[in-house]
Length: 214
Image (cartoon, rainbow, N blue to C red; front, side, top):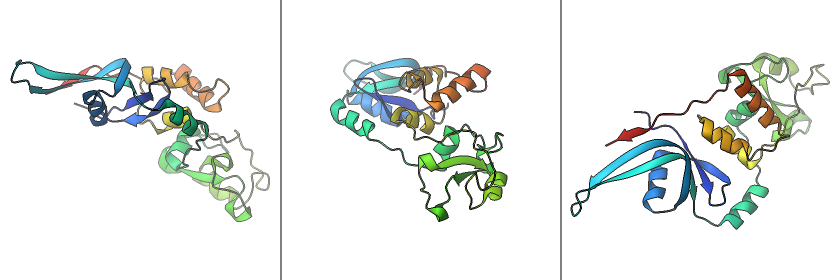
């Protein structure tokens, strides 16, 4: 049985917070910190038998759960949040597409390119980096796209908090995707890329059947 499917955790107001595994989800259910749940049933976990009643404890874990917490503080954190930059989320932001030649590649064939090179004072920041295949990155070298006579196919951007949650997800189910899309601005480049994948069928997300363990 695959227990690797992540659960989307929200705050009590319904804003996405993070991905958690089934162990953390069970702990939140057990300590009564789950305010409500939605989405599909992922896991049905069975515990020990109550000696007095003879009943066996059961915890159902849904794909999306909301937990109690200080939403005012969390809101301030989200509003001023700049996600950490790493290649995994960068490549996913750009849909594993080289933004110079326009071809798709495996993650192992991609690299992080600084539009304004670090040697020329460029920053290692979301708005100055794009996904590039190794051939294009080597050709561009320590030059700007204009100097290398290379066209940049899209403008880089800093993901919002909800967008970064999506980018960190290993496998996003259809109901989780629908929920996250509701919190991603309609003019977001990432939203447009997600919708394009879904429309083409290449980004179709399948839900998991309910699982149980003893």
